[in-house]
Amino acid sequence: MGRIISVILFLAVFAHALYGEEPYVYNITEKAKASIYSKGDVLLCSGGDMAGDLNNKAASLMIEGKWEEASLLLERGLEQEPLFFPFRYNLGLCYIYLNKLDQAMVNFQKCQYLVPEYYKIYLQIGYVYLRKNNENEAIQYYRKALKLHPRDLNTYVLMGDIHLRRRQLNLARKYYEKALSQNPKFQNGILGLAKIHFINEEYLKAINLLKSVDLSGDYDKSFHYYYAESAFKMRDYQTAAREYEALLQFKNDRFFLENSILLIKHKLELSLRFTER
Image (cartoon, rainbow, N blue to C red; front, side):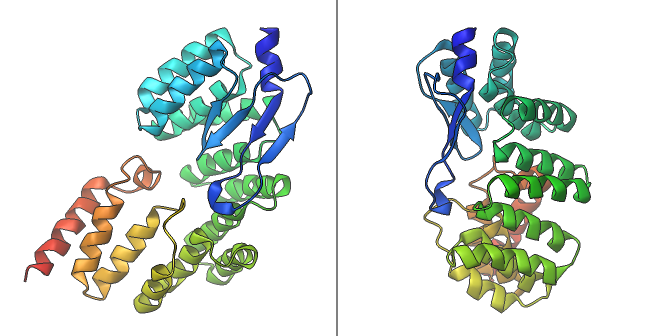
């Protein structure tokens, strides 16, 4: 147990590749024998111990979208190692995708006590609050994440998205532009500005912005939704079909936790039907 606890006291988390940053490192003790790193939101371990191996097996299932199977492995792991941070954090993610939001919240709140310096904990808690339609609490937790990691561009976008939901478009723009001021090519920042144009029914402006987005790195998959919807409004049904089809390639994405796959399939069918006319 002592060896495993020493592992969790060292957390080396690599910043998301799309930010173009150096690894974001929390060096809590010099006794650590392994490190923990992220692939997207999912945490993986190096070091080759039993807990790390079990976590990585669960992480692989999570990346494949097998949330139920992964959660069972992580629950089993927590019975043996209740203080092992990756078990707790990844299980919270599984519960989000299984729509067990209260259980997700419990696990992320426990994560705060294990590694309070890890900013993504607060992003996950904020997301859970957002799913519960508590925007005020979500904003507070996003602010905590920004305080810990002010270079995380996606957190500015998440703040902007809340204001977008509220139709506070000037505030939303401020946060998107804040991210773009640090990286003018940041995909999700450009997408944010495109969403403002979409809400204002400026579909051509939205499309022109979306065309400039580099999709070679990681990006918010709702990009394809807004591109498809804007193209559909402009009666460019061939482009709309292409983008709906692209969106459906990411069925395990968070987009589909709040949006219906069946609806997107229906819109794809409509687009294809109009294309054939």
